[in-house]
Length: 219
Image 1 (tube, rainbow, N blue to C red):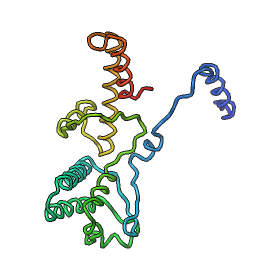
Image 2 (spheres, helix red, strand yellow):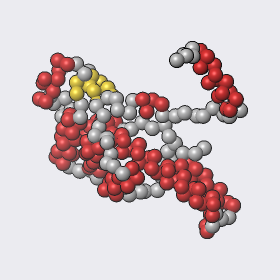
Image 3 (cartoon, helix red, strand yellow):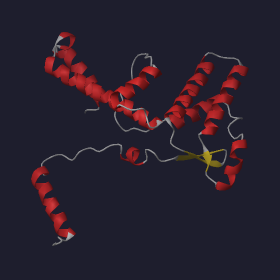
Image 4 (tube, rainbow, N blue to C red):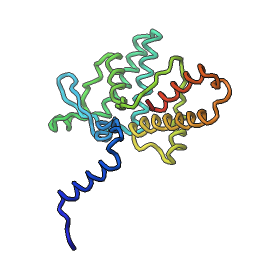
């Protein structure tokens, strides 16, 4: 078998690429960092101690999300100090369950640690939200009105879209965002092909198309 030097193969590949794509614009690639570190642990320092935050499972992320919302609601409603303290303790316990000290000599005593139990409600809420945050460079269109999110409906929507349960919290969040963009693209394609009803006039159509293209992740 005759082997071709790599340099010759590379030169041929470059020539074929130039022949077919010389005039095509370079694609804009996003989310490289997110894709490369999707299942990698994150690290941070709290009180002078370094911690690992392993990738969250779906249930773990959901519990942290609920805890963060509970703390925010109690603070917004001016709940009693006792109620807020109890909720903060529960949230701190959840945070503790999802972290590990970076230094090995601290780990044997980690189950007995009370590192986060003396923190305030705002600090624990912020830490919960940091833990469940999933980076994503894809365009996001914030809603200008109040929305209601049904977590049960969202879970079933994920399974309907992908035919399986979420493998992790990041898988769930990114999967739902991708499904939303896919639905927006399908809606836009259908609307372009029909252009009927309220969006048929030029002014209404332009506004609708602009919004849908943003939701679909198209620029």
